[in-house]
Length: 335
Image 1: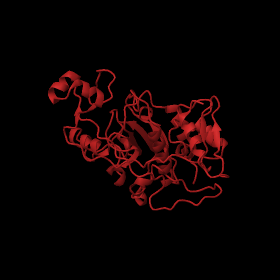
Image 2: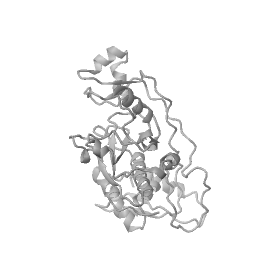
Image 3: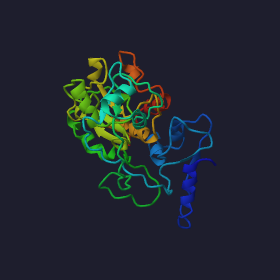
Image 4: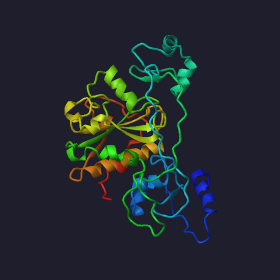
């Protein structure tokens, strides 16, 4: 009781034809983790997260029902992340300078303080130098047709569950770009996760600011961006030019670490808000896919604050580090 996602699944199951297989669930016990549940049932954390779109691996509750992957069960359609929004005008965002206040920014831009608070999810008037503030309302996201498989592949026929190649729900739309440099990959050693420190943004916006405001020759400092539904789809993976050209990153304070570290930026400020389930699933899937592109090398997963040579809170004090580490620190499994 009390779990709306499970209740909805049970309600939908009543519409199945007589004799259809009964959905198989796992009831969460106190202290259990996604990794432990996956190991118990012979599956992977990524597959469990794909089968349970609303599940947050950092906040499992005893008694919660988790649908086990590979079982026949009715599931609500999940839309593929919407395409990235069109390029923002230069006055869509404002970079906070030392000494700026919301009231001063309101006077300079003509945007009401109440709108600045609402459009940037600000619970207080504290702002930090370097932060990006949205100056326009977020346009409503367009929903793409429901499609939970890689484009161009036909659905699998019904039958007994069997070991298959992962569906790559989040990696799928970006897979061609991710695979593009596979014949000339650098000797990467680390995957480092960051947050943008902003309420919104996408790869195009970050590329503009890193190029024009910070003067970075190769543009956006990261290799990948994972959207939060503001200026790109929730969980949408965007591939940057640094990955396509296999250039060193610009996301760490150490140049030697930038040479061997892939940078992934999650859109959001996880010192103020929590990581959502779709971004979580996309991050896990992307890391596991990147590991598969380098069969002779195990890419080590690190948070920005765990590897940077200068102190930083990134990716935020609310980032679910223990839960993510438990999943991504495990040895890579083959498909």
